[in-house]
Image 1 (tube, rainbow, N blue to C red):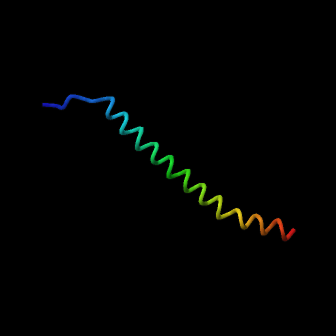
Image 2 (image 1 turned 60 degrees about the vertical axis):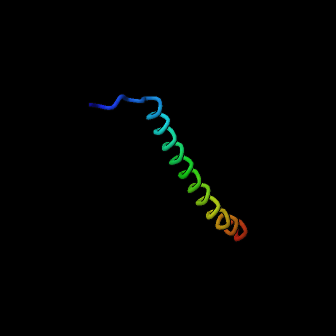
Image 3 (image 1 turned 30 degrees about the vertical axis):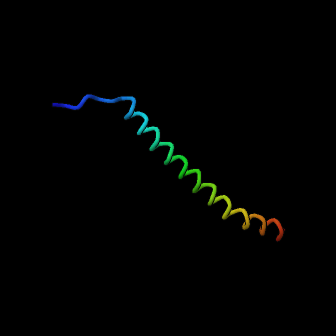
Length: 47
């Protein structure tokens, strides 16, 4: 017998996973931005 679908729970799970991926991507972008920032400051001082 097939299981009864629980659409609300499945959607919450998908949204939770999507939010976690989005937060991880934003964190990586922030880390990359802070890594570049000192390089940009050094270039500005050199000019």
